[in-house]
Amino acid sequence: MGYITPEGLANLKKYKYISGGRTKLDEIMNHWWEWVVNQLPMNMAPNLITLVGLIFNMTGCLIYLWEDTTLTKKFPAWMYFYSATCSFIYQTLDAVDGKQARRTGTSSPLGQLFDHGCDAVTLFFGLVVFGQIARCGVDWSFFLFFWGLSLTFYTQQWEEFHTHIFRTCIGNWGVTEGLLMQLSYLYGVALTDGWLAEVNVQSALPFYQFPEVIGTLTLCRICSIMIFYKYIQYILSLIAGLAAAKCSKVEALLGLAPLPIFWIEMIIVFSTEWGLNNPALSILLLFPSYCLMTCKHIVCSVCHMSFSPVQLSPLVFLLFVANKYAATLVPGLAKLQMAGAVGSNLVPESCVAMFVFIFTLVAFSKFVVSTIAQITQYLDIYCLTIKKKSL
Image (tube, rainbow, N blue to C red; front, side, top):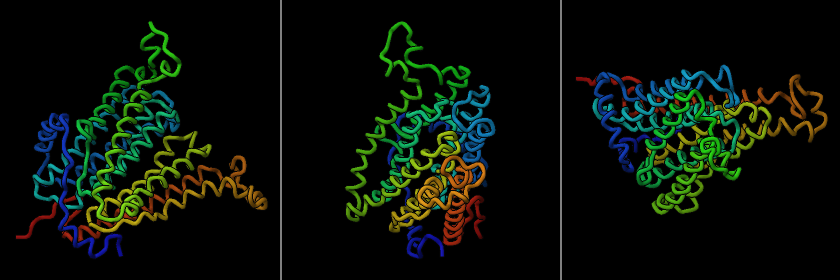
């Protein structure tokens, strides 16, 4: 039996996507999106458009990992241009997939799930790209971005679950504005051959002596502070979601429980020597676990099913803790220490990371495949192609 209950499948036909508004920039960019969608063939499935965009975005990230996983190395300008362009392509295709669905008459709840699921994956690969271009390493600004993005995306799904409205903006600031700011930074670093990532307030304005706390602010740090302010605004806006909850306030707040659990996963991973030395890989290690809990919430929202905050897959991250302290707590285990293990670790942390990644990736993939199979079978549609209508 799949994740979706029979009642949830029946509710699929009742689902209706309601957007939470558009910004002025959305209106401007809409001309570009309309032009792009009109160039696409009518037999191209909306989900295929989303998948192509995701693949572009992933390649824009993976080209760096062959050379550096520390988020500190400077790369040739063409690589920055490539990853920035991949991000722009994904943003464009992500915006036109819904238009293609309406254009071809293939709108369905599966499109909503597929779109938001790909967005969840993109969040992590996009963060690696930003970290590589900013060369921020494990700077506090990097963690502020990571924390904020994980908070915002998950709470968007939580809010839609209770209000049945998916908000992509607050006032005139939304997803498009955030992506445009990111793209401006990515292309700016590429055009200046990396200089924009290095400049700080003091070096940009040498004629005035700033206090050290201000003078050392890079553009990346300034952007993280600005976006943090928007995060605070978004948190305050969640009161609307809580007020609209038909269940008890305690039950509604429990729906947010997977978030602090995920942040604990972050702390566990980045508290290891391997995690601090390989922040790019650490981000990608965390993505299957985050995407699994987020996609479960999306499915429950679309299918009008109750959401259980109990998640078992995060328990696998405790292997990092067990690996580090087991030999200390049980001295006899020290004899089993593998070659290459550092300190009190029983096995190299990289081996633990590999196991955790494979375990969570399999769990996430299994959920995605089974859920797509359930929906396509029930609605009698295909996922990546458009089914010909019977005469």
